[in-house]
Image (cartoon, rainbow, N blue to C red):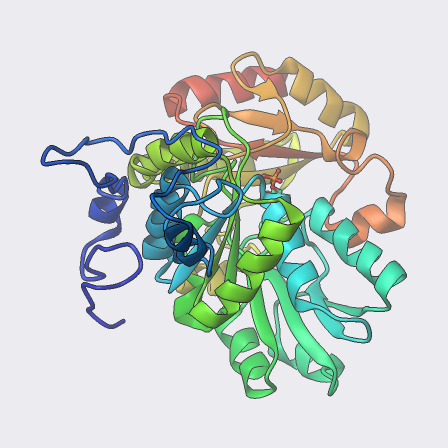
Length: 404
Ligand SMILES: *Cc1c(COP(=O)(O)O)cnc(C)c1O
């Protein structure tokens, strides 16, 4: 990585992630004194002293703030912070993770294009691709993400884009980004990766050849279960410019208060992520020893199908795990209703531990065969491990297991 003090975030890339996260809230210009926290520029539009000055501001993504759908100083502070953390040239903050996914796919794909997508993608991303395939004649092939050979077998002259997730949900499969991106780039295929579950603290996909890194900042980056947001970070400014223009047309850009909450969350991301990983490691190891549990999936647990690539690619095992209860569907439901500290809720990556039973909620419309393909069993429980004291968490898990 080059040491360059003039990168997008304004911070030297030689700094550690902990330092970059704390100093990500670049204050806006003021007269002489500087706020430590980025102000919330809660203004829909900005006035100018002349018509020419406004026209100049409207020329592209880098002009002065003119209208907040096109850019806002608080949102730009978040974009600089995200570009800095991911090592990208520029970032686009969006109203949700899906806002980033949709803006990128709708901006870059044309009828007749071919896309290679990972089989276990987030449900919403899967739906966008299915929609594009049906309505715009975009063809999609699916791969596991574990081996470059699978990608080689489906590449075509019209392959435009490869879409994978660093860590998939709820299987915790880790895509072999260097192998996949190495091959894709040699064929001129754009490499897009959803890095929501890893966060830039555990993996920076641009260092492995990604062109675009997507985030649901709702998850670990904001981290406090209080805001919906997303982002796309670009290795290259030109690609950023074309997606920015489409995101402005789609109206999927971020609002200032949401951006502010996300910036505030990012400042403690390194501390939180360390604790998420430590707590998940303890729970994963102990769950694996319980007779009620058939299998545990956590990327850094020896025996996980992605263990080798996870140790190579990730700086930690992450805060998400899933496990299969021997008692099947009934046990899965009883477990999530039996925990007292952990709550039943969608989402992940927040300070509090959340559990779901995918077979009866997020994946309820899938039949047995489709569940198998998604890596979800009838008795699978997904757990987003929070920041509570790990012994309190374990006691909660233990009493729920004993109640089965
Ligand atoms: C939650 C999530 C999304 C969607 O993000 P929203 O902020 O809910 O729109 C996309 N990808 C992954 C991996 C997610 O976990």
